[in-house]
Length: 212
Image (cartoon, rainbow, N blue to C red; front, side, top):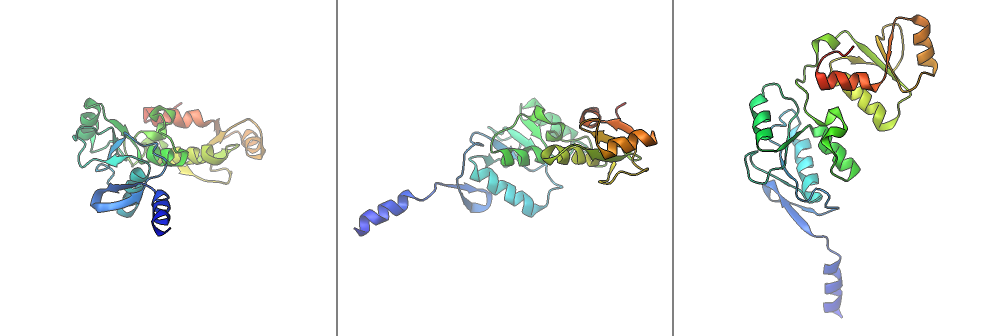
C-alpha cells in the first residue's frame, strides 16, 4: 500500500544533525560522539576548509562550541602556540585537550578518536615560522611509504627545513627507514650527509630545537 511504502521509505532515511549556521548533515559512523570542539583558534585554516571540518564533525556525532569556556568543551583546535599562550594554558587549566588540525584530520581518516600522544604532529607547534636552527637543513627521505613518509615530510616542513625528494650533494639529512637502498649508499659514499631516522625529527619537534 501507499502508506506501507511511505513507512519503508522513512525507515531508510539517515538521522540528521544540525551544526552552526543551521547547516544540516546526515549522521555517519558516530565515533566523535561526546566530543565538543572549539575551532576559533584555528585562524590559519581557510574558512571553506573549516566549514567542511565542521560538517565532518557533525557527520560523525560531534559538535562545535562557540567558546572554549563553554561547558562540555573537550578539544580546542589550534595551529600554533605562538601568540596564543594564554588561550593554550587556559584550555589546559580547564582540562580541554589542545590539538592541531592534523589530529582531527587523522581521526577523520582513521574513523576513530586517536591518542594525541601518538604523534608529535597532533599537538600545535610553538610557531608556524619553524626553528631557526633548522633553516639551513635540507631533508630527504628513503624507505618510508604512505602515511609515514607523509609524516616525515610534514615534520621537516613544520620545523622550517627544506624537503626535497631527490638526493644530491645539497642534502644535509637523509631520513632512512633502514640502512639500505641507493640514497643511503650514495650518502655513505659522499660522507657529508647526516643519516638519521624519523625519531630525529620527532625529537626536534617535541623539543622545538634541532636535535643532535
